[in-house]
Length: 62
Image (tube, rainbow, N blue to C red; front, side, top):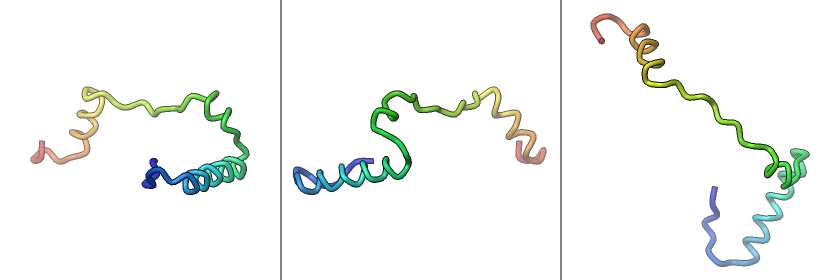
């Protein structure tokens, strides 16, 4: 998410304060975000997914 503000220092400080407050409420530190890799869900391959879709539709729609 990016800020729509351009070059306004007080607005940037407000954004940073809001981020710090949110992290504090979540019991996190900025370091926690750097040390923990983001988990990404595994995506099905085309070969995995097409049989699932095919089984979910009627014969006439295949």
